[in-house]
Image 1: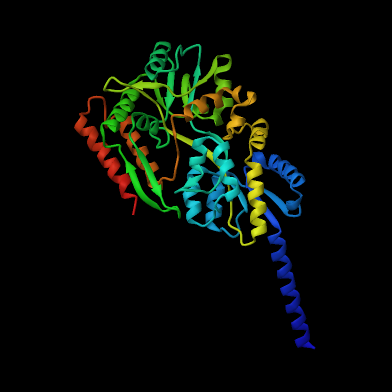
Image 2: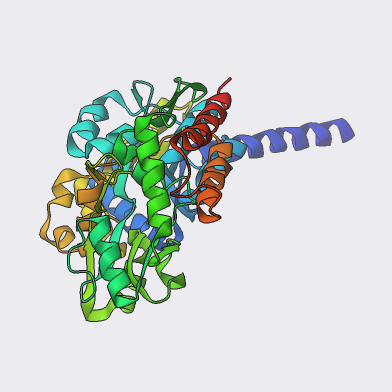
Length: 404
């Protein structure tokens, strides 16, 4: 009798485990930022109505922002979401961790043709498209007070207007994200290649060059202006007439400048060689990823939902709901998106940027040190070209040392 009871308990436990596994298999978990959970749930309802073949899955939407999603997925892929939103600079790590399925072959053409080139590039590792773009709104441009700044197109003009008015111009030059505006603007390169597993394979560095020297000199010249303040947050700026910042601070910028609120792409700057260069920098994107699945039917449902949530119609609806800037070209051309001054300025600026790929963690602290050497006047307008090239060579050598 006792053996029979044990046997029955074992059968019950196995059945319970089987039911649990089946329930898990029938569930599709979606991670998105907290401010779009309700929106995403509503869109999933629309998806199920339009796709009855996929309506029987249990869709669960959880608030896990793109800043945390990649780390959580890499830590435990199996326990992670089936579909999740993440920042494009995490894509190589996610591929290396086996946390991203390639975009379904039937969806590749639409993704590549419907979205801007920067977003498509950000969703690609090697030659493989791994994610569905949903925004092109993570970058920086110029907010300014149009009662002070007469012409936002040149850095020299902005600084002259700020100096004349006793106002400040803000930019964060001790940031590896913002300082690329100068280096990429002059044509100095700093990118990393990754293989299809996400591992770093090469550093393409050209900072120790005539182009890099021009960029470094321009940063030093900027730092020497009495109007310059190091920073990139409207909320922390004082006596500000212009600031290089992103769409996330649009509300604060409107409050700061009031009726004089205006936006523009980043300005040009004059190099020490007398030529004019357009500030460049990084562009950033939000992407939707699909986790690899053992169940082909579930994978098909996940791909279909990811394609739906990244479609132009849903991107436009998402912009209207929470202000996320679309990567879809048709949505970008809509009247409501074009009427958003910050997004319009960013879109113009993104034409001069490169998608931020994966960079070693140590790069960011190294770039901060480079900017700090300018801020502390360790290097100044009086520094010789040889001294400045030595600084750039050391920087470049260190960047290259992060590979291998």
